[in-house]
Length: 70
Image (cartoon, rainbow, N blue to C red):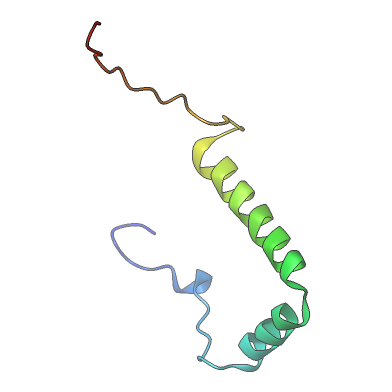
């Protein structure tokens, strides 16, 4: 994509409610909820790896509070 123009060789237009879309829906509806959650978790982990790099774990979060002394 150069100069704000869309590279039309890379764009694929699919009509809503196409055969492929119905196949996708019926495939996922045939899977158990556990399998769907597992697939979603796999996609989430792959996206986070792409977006944020290797596994980082949780960031440490802390809050300093002032307490009254007794």
